Every structure is written in C-alpha cells, then in structure tokens.
Amino acid sequence: QVQLVESGGGLVQPGGSLRLSCVASGFTFNMYGMRWYRQAPGKDRESVAATTSGGYSISYADSVKDRFTISIDNAKNTVYLQMNSLKPEDTAVYYCNARIATMQGPRDYWGQGTQVTVSS
Image (cartoon, rainbow, N blue to C red; front, side):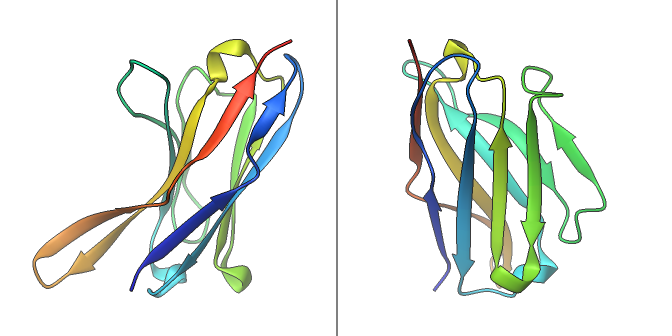
C-alpha cells in the first residue's frame, strides 16, 4: 500500500535551516508529482511547494518563495524540502502528499507529518 514517511523536523532558531525528507513506497514514484503542505495550530492546511515527477515544473507559496526548495530523487523515492531563513511563522506540522490514480479516481495520500518549530 501507499506509504509516505516524513522526517527531519525539529526545533530551530529563527534564521536557521532544516531539510525535510519524505520517503515514498507502494506506487510508481517517478510517475507522480509530489507536494509539501503544512498546518499550524488553529489554521487550515496549506500548500507550501509542489513539483512534477521529473522536477521540471515547481511552484511555491508566496510566503516561502526564495527561502524553501523542493527537490526530488527518483532513485531514492524521496522528496525533500530544504528550508532556509526560517521564521517563527513557519512553525507547523509539515506533510508530504501524493495524488495517486486509483480505479475510483485520484486519491490523496498523506504522511504522518513532522513537526517544525522555529523559536529562540
């Protein structure tokens, strides 16, 4: 079955960096784009970054543009989110997402999430 496992979260000071990883299994990874979302306490889940399967088309939320970088390694079935110049407002649980074709139509799959806390 489809599994997405995130790692790399933690506590970091403002201005610091973290790299999140999401290892995927259970589907043909190089056929699907991948996305990172985040959800802060009391807020809706929001899209942070997205990439096509080959990394040819990438998009970012305005709030993270020029600070975050999404990348994909098809050989390792892994998608990364490099986060630089972190701000307290980046504090959230970060989730990776894959939208997979099924017999019933496209279905969203989510990892368990990894907590990122930006605080001095």
